[in-house]
Image 1: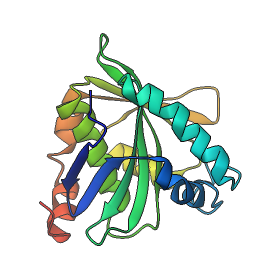
Image 2 (image 1 turned 180 degrees about the vertical axis):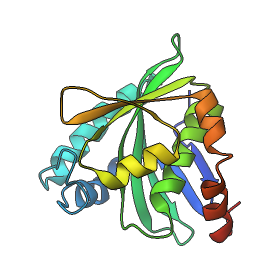
Image 3 (image 1 turned 30 degrees about the horizontal axis):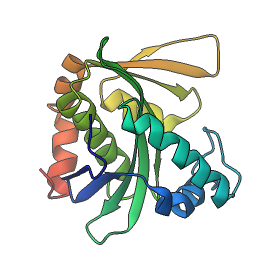
Image 4 (image 1 turned 45 degrees about the horizontal axis):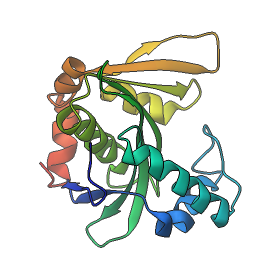
Length: 186
């Protein structure tokens, strides 16, 4: 389990667990239709988000759900991502809610790698499952780059699985290494 004051820094980005003081930032990210075209868009209600965070903190305390906010080296909020439905017995969890402030500085890639490091290396998860809307080309490219296995479904979503071996292989991909080197973050 992660401590309440958990922080993890890599690639010039720091991840920490969300708190009630992040409600406005979360609402700004999650109510922006340009960022949430393929995910559930929240109504812009900060009080409701605070209540959701309070309820979430109970799951966090049990080690069932971790919701991260990411900051750049200047302290600016740049994204959100989650590891939820954690099953330590089966060593699996769900990755979800990736959202970034802008598509710059490879934030989506860096945040996804950090989430995977936390899941696989710190929490010792063996499999992450997720889903992605079939029309979300950017997320599909990212998930393929990260070596997720795609399973077609009869819905508007692909089901995804990333196991430890494919996670480790993704870190060896030339394009990921090149991107991180370009960003002086390797």
